[in-house]
Image (cartoon, rainbow, N blue to C red):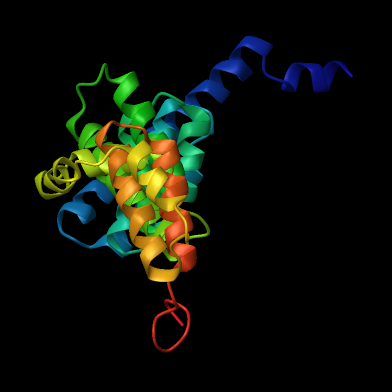
Length: 252
């Protein structure tokens, strides 16, 4: 009706009023964030979380980059309270708004590290390092720290598994070559593999410990000339001839 049309504000004026209201809410949200920062500096982490939550709730545009800051700050406050799962969730929310937020990538890396998710933590620290041009010390140090933890975890898991076979011949060769005393043993064996092979094939043929001893000597002779594959076969044959230790299997 004409009366209703007269009462309604012009479209531009209505839009302007909406913008003003949104700006006012955003300003309130930033003031809540600032108060949260003061609470954080005073080590009132619970109170800081409350203010950051209020900032998130007041923000009219939930995709604004300032909201990523609100989530990131609350993540840090929750981390100080050892609430690492909640801190990680806040980091997720911040990064959904600003995927290149390096400070929050580092915070999520720490949260994931504390929760034991080392692979994901390492990914966060690596991303933060790359985004910062490898200049962010927190990211670089965090990545190195988590990489050491990952290596230790995997080494422990590997050691916990039963050994089902001897290491490869190349591994044995590298291992032996790294020890002076082992090199001295190799140098002390003067008989060639062919000479020891003849002794093994002699009549009557050696048996038991005598045969095992000759096989061990031939293995050493093979290793002296870096012929590790036949050396490995001789070691395995010698081990098969030896009696089991007292008490049964090794490790029983």
